[in-house]
Amino acid sequence: MDWFSVRNVYHFGTTETGDNIFEERVVCFKAKDFSDAHEKGKKESATYALENGFIAYDEQLVYKQDGEELIDCYEVWSELFQSPLDLDSFYREHYLKHLYVP
Image (cartoon, rainbow, N blue to C red):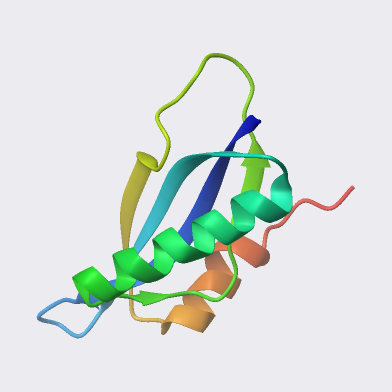
């Protein structure tokens, strides 16, 4: 089995001024292939969102890791963003608008 990292984006909360707060979070999984990693990522993301009262964006990205062994289901990245946009608009603006497609 190989190591994969799965990125999800969540609506994290709202500021006092009404701006939305979004979390970009990357978690690693040991999986047999991309499909297996997606399924593990979906399950973990749903649990994370439910336990914290967040809203998960529908799309997640999976990429295969190289290098040393990792810890299964370990969070390796988390970053918060503030924006007046809703979750769908934020995702399109932040992740899709400037997407490089060779």
